[in-house]
Length: 398
Image (cartoon, rainbow, N blue to C red):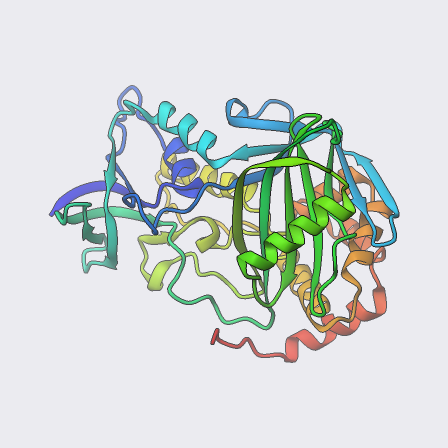
């Protein structure tokens, strides 16, 4: 059995971000022995995808940023428009291929780091307080590692029990239009002029990268994703009838599903004291919005800081308890239909200062600021929902 100080299972955003931030050694302190395990080419590797987040000033990953914007826009079903500047912050887009290429370059030759291609079959705690990682390489060669700490980004076998379980599901096209139809400085964050489903809500999402190029997505909040054919119909409807793009070329596509749940993702895998879950598997996805990338960075930095200080590197909760409680109320209110989703989001962006709203979405506001945001929502339906939540028991996934 080979040995390592740290094993990271998965080399997506969470795994690469953690490897990037881990201590690299220094005078009198050798670099930890780290094994970064990524699956071989095939169905276990996630498809190419896009991550967005907001940030003030230069960022650690700016070399991989495709585009960034200062202005965000929401459009109501009837055409009402809310346009907000988020300066001094900017809304940034990173494509996974660019992010992975950047971090692979930066990790090349890192002391103590070994990249391993293998499919992990089990991670288990050992009696001596370490963990064992087993699996197989692409040619069937066995993988057997013992480590002091294991960070696992693979999704759990079953989602956690929850009172509300919705999905943010989407399909997007990277398009090139025949004429200059996009506004390069403005993101259409939520365009509710899409056809609304019977249960949940839907919106268009437009990230322009030039006057003629953009990522255009159809996004739904609901109990189940659509078929690929249904997404294609909705995207054709949105780009044609709503946006009026005219002749265009679809350069590539991406599709995904993000959990929106008030279930609690355990950060210790199976109760083991040295095996931790990170990324979406460790609760980094904000339940009410689906944003994940910025929380992954906070989580990774906290783990690296604990390791440098010689403390137990259990990842902290990516989002404060109060934020998760508010998310639970919002998700339940949306799921029951007590609030009109498009009207709610439009009202928040219209009535809450942009700087405060971004801090609220990051979980960095104080209680009085949360209350100030709360009164901009439909108060009575939200209070009714908050009152019933303690009496609802979390249900396991079917």
